[in-house]
Length: 256
Image 1: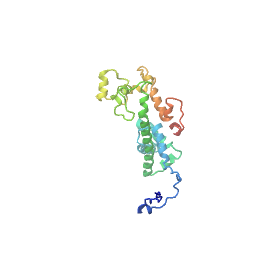
Image 2: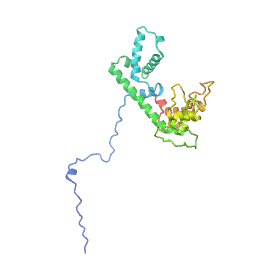
Image 3: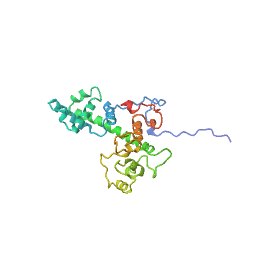
């Protein structure tokens, strides 16, 4: 019996499909999407937050700086300013140095312009702090123990709620120099928050070798390997912590 070679009709497109317009250039990826514009003040704000001051309210600093400058111009003496006022005035002068035209821009700005400038700088400073803390959150777990060892109990690289005085290792590093973490009563009070730590009670982890010398309190201050690693991680590159820097992009130190 001869084979039927008649082809069955292909399914026809629906009416909706027939009315679609043909899109040209299907075989090409098309033009590259332009990067969104970012105001340069945001980048300057990132530098300010990393290298000058991390937590200040930039709008208040600019406003107070302008007020203090006016008082000095009217005959006031900087010697009569309080410590906080002199510190704020110093931060204000640092802001004026962020860009070559920043001084003219701020001195000639309206109140609305001042708010806009401050918001952009604050956005950069806040963004830099968020990026750095997010990046350090996991990396720091590799630095607080010796190579080949593990934390017990283990800590999550993405969650901070089980750290601080709640964990044996992080609690030991955060313990103030005037307290003994190995004392069960002290440890229990710190863990339960019954014992609060004042701002002037510095943790042991800032000292070189985690050793504090009461006879020479400045000896080794801010020289611990943990702080050195954090600095290199942020300002050079994460890879520079363990070995020679092989990053292909400029680190934050060069960018800023």
